[in-house]
Amino acid sequence: NEAVEQVAFADRLLINKTDLVSEDDLTRIEARLKKINAFAPMQRCSQAEVSVDSVLDIRGFDLKRTLEMDPEFLNTDGEHEHDASVTSLSIIEPRELDHFLCQQFFENLLQTKGTDLFRIKGVLR
Image (cartoon, rainbow, N blue to C red; front, top):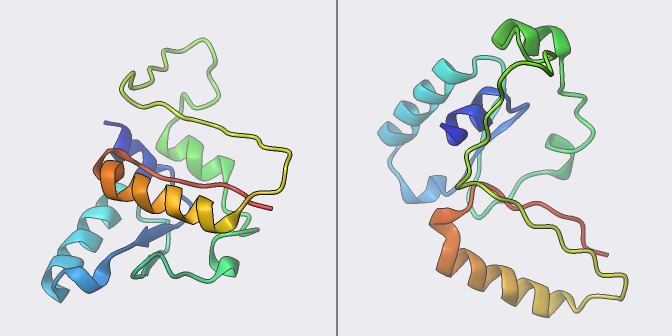
């Protein structure tokens, strides 16, 4: 399951939309996430408001810990299957972007396809 793998190998877990669920639900979700990844710090947030310092330049990857979770991590001859239903998209645009139009695009994307997205990340200049 791709979502479980994402949680298992995460350096940080951001639990978003916390304003939309009860404290009991949050506690239950955090306990479930902790069973999958006991190492990653969890941060509750709403509307994806987090400090940049809490997610960038955290030096979170630890090979020893990764090998404890997955001893075959470095085995390039081993079987590694990707979920064919999970894809990625990269857009590189050398020209200056209209940030308002980008925001409209991402808002529409989240409203229409939000349940199909695992994550969105990027750098806009």
